[in-house]
Structures are given as C-alpha cells and as structure tokens.
Image (cartoon, rainbow, N blue to C red):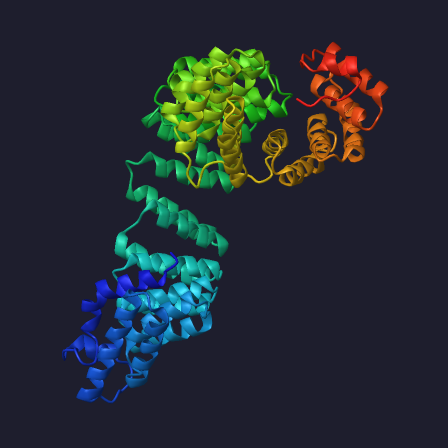
Length: 592
C-alpha cells in the first residue's frame, strides 16, 4: 500500500499513545526500554525532553492540518534536539518515501530499527523497504533478527523462507522450514516446500522421506498417499506408484485424485484401453468434483486433437457428461468453448449457449456471444428478450445496454431506446468500458438529432468524445449535423478530417467532409472528396445522398450537365428529396 501524508498522520495519531511510552520524556523505567536502546545515550535534560516532545507533537498536528512542509521541518528540528528518537526516524522515513527520497528513507528506517531493535513495526517496515529495492541480503538479516526476537511468528519465518529461496540458499531455506515445522507441525504446504528444497539440492532420498512422513502422519488422508505416489511416478518408480494408487482406490473407489493419477499412469505405460476405462469411471462418477472432470475432459480433448481431432467423439463424450451433470455450468461452458474453437455451425453453437444460459443465466460472456451470433437475423424481439434479463444479472455491463438500445431503435421505439441509454449511462463507473460508454452517448446524440433537439444532441456527442476522442462514427455524425446546423463549420471540418484520415476510403466519411467544404463555399476542394466518395461507394445501390451532394457541388462549379446526371442517378437510387426534381428542371443548385 502506498502511504500518503494523510495516511501517515492517521497512523501516528491513532498509534501515538502506544508510541509515546518510549518517548524520552514519557518513558517509564522498565526492562523493555533498556533493551531497545542499543547504544549508551546521554539522557536529555528535562527542558530538552519538553522541547523535543513539543516539536514532535507540533509536527503531527501540522501534518493533520495538511501543512506537510511545516510538519517535515518540525520533525527534522525535533531530531536535532533528540537524535536518538526512534519514533521520529520512523515517521521521517515515511515522509521521505512519499517524497521519493528512497535512499534517505531506508537510512532513516535503519536508524529507527537500530535504536529500537525489538520494535516489530520498525523491523518489518525496514525489511519491506529492502525487499522493494531488491536488497534481499539486508532483508534476510532484518527478518532473522525479527525471528530471533519473536520465534512464535511463523509469518516472519515464511517470508524468510521465500527470501532464501529467492537467493537460492536452499540449505538455509530448509533450516527455516524446520523452524516453521517445529512451531506449526507438519502440513502439506510446508512439506511440499521442503521437498522442493531437497530436490533443488539434489537430495531425492530426503525428499521422499518428507513426503512419506506426511503420508504416515495423516494415514486417513488418502490425498497425501496419492501425492507420494505421484512423486514416485515422476521419479521413475511406476510400480511403487501403481501399488499406492490401487491401495487408495480399494479403500476409496471414487477418489477422483487417485483415478486421475491412475489414468496418467496407464497413459505413461502405454495401456491406453485401461486409461479409457479410468476416464469413464472419472466422468461417470457423480462424486467426482467438477474441477477433476474438467481437467479430464481437457486432457481427452488434447489427446483427441493429437490423434486427428474427431469432434464427434468429443461431443459425444461431452453430451454424456452433461447428461449426468445437467446443472454443471462449468462443463456446459467447456462444451461451448470447444464448439467455438472448432468453428461449428452457428445454430449448433447457439443451442449449446442457450443450454449454458439455462444453468448460468449470469454468464455475460456467453450471452454476448449469443447476441452477436444472432444479430444478423435481425430478430429484434429475440435480442430484446436476451438483453433484458442480462441487465438484472450484469447491471454494470455496458454492452447489454448498447445492444438493447439498438434493438429498440431498429423497432423505431425511440422512447424505450432513450430510456435504455439513460439507464446505461447511470451505471457508468471508472471501470466501465470506455468505448462502449462512448457508443451509448453517441447513440443518445443520434436520438436527440432525430427528435430535432440539436443542443441536447451536441451535448451527448461531446460526452461521447470525452470517453473516446477517436470515436470515428460519432465524429462523423457530429461534424455532419454541425454543418447542417450551419454553425461551427471550422470545428466540423476538424472532426470530419479525423474520420477520413482514419478511414480514407469510407464513402460516408468522404461525403461528410466534402459537404462541410461545400458549406464553406470551397467548391473545388469539395469536388475532390465528393468524387472519391462516389468512387468508393461500392454498394450494389449507391447512396442517393452522396449522389445528390456531388451534383450540388458540380452545379456550384458551373458543371450543370454533370450535376443533372448525378441528380438523376440519385433519384434512381431511391432519392426522394423534394428539391431533386426542381434542381433537374432548373439545372442549378437550390438551397433548402
């Protein structure tokens, strides 16, 4: 955690009563006090004690009031009066760390720890500093000192064990593990750490003994027996491992850990038929946990892929497992993932996703995948039925508001579209997907434009660009409607230019840019981009808007015949502008 000055102040104010018991002027004569002072220090006079305490407390109060520079200076001055005040060095160190004065901070913390060697807080903070700056040897010394003072603190020993591992000092790592074991007793994690250390030292014999001791210490826990057998397998003692697996399964036939390991044994020894039998036992066993089944399924899929990748075999196996575990969402999700990987037909994949959502309706990823798969069908009611419950399970997922809004918009239900967008943006946090939030605001702008509420539209577009300043679709629409409004043409041009730089062959964006230039009476420049818009409009039916705009530009350049030609093409493409026919009749551009 990074400490701010305010954090430091709170720590001090809350902890000051405890700290003050070791201040020179408040200290009581006791054994602990004698231990904490590592060097002979001349006692402060009564006056100096009072002065030190006064400046130290003023420093704390100044920091609490936000006057950090004063707090720092006061603290430095208090140390000039009493250069042996551990608590002052500790506080000074926290200030220096905040000021990025790392070397000074470590020195101050070292001084605090030296002056008060039995203060756990000082020692641990110094060790943390050393670790942060990769001074592992120094950190080890501090933790060894702390562990000597507090042999009951196994958390300190665990950090020490990790530090020795970091330094590849496996001998001392083992000694530290023994100290932990004496305090806490034998356990799985500590034994595995010991085994690893022995193996790194090349001592297989003692590694085996450690695992055997763990298994013997807990004779009723078959997982330790299997753990021992797995180690034997890894060390070329398959027969010994097999004897343990079969012994465990005789005692506990449904032990998934032992079954999975036995499967690995049969695969390793080339007994594939027996391996398949074990896999069937694992997958058909209702007592096998989901994680074990998933691991086995993944292994089956991997082996199937290596053998040629017959997906029918995998799907048959998945269907059988799903039938036995109809409420297991993880297995259902695994089936969807496999079908997606194998690029199976959308209808079959969609059916699998529906089955997954029936048992895991809160699975946002699967629901979004289904929505995207069926979007091209334009079944807006189905999209709505998928999105609405998603908002109950995943209210902070902006994508559902986006797709639901689009579906309502396609049904021309503008009120519900706007309501959905408003609900979506009300759920926005700093963790929301910025691109999706930008799209929601852009859509909101389009809705207000459709309603003729241009100021609200422009405000929504501004919000969209706040979330994603390169939202090309928003920039295009914003620029076009600004030009239509006849205001801020320079701003509109700047935004539109960004779109054609991003997508130089997008006919819509080229048309917008050409039109904005046209609105500024820059007809020759407008023609360049209008011609590109027409050339890049490769749809089977060209855009009547692009054709009409191009005709308008040609007309203003005095090319009446070319203009009429473009206007006539616009009518054939479906253009129904009331001015089109008049333009053709008069062979000139007419403003709206």
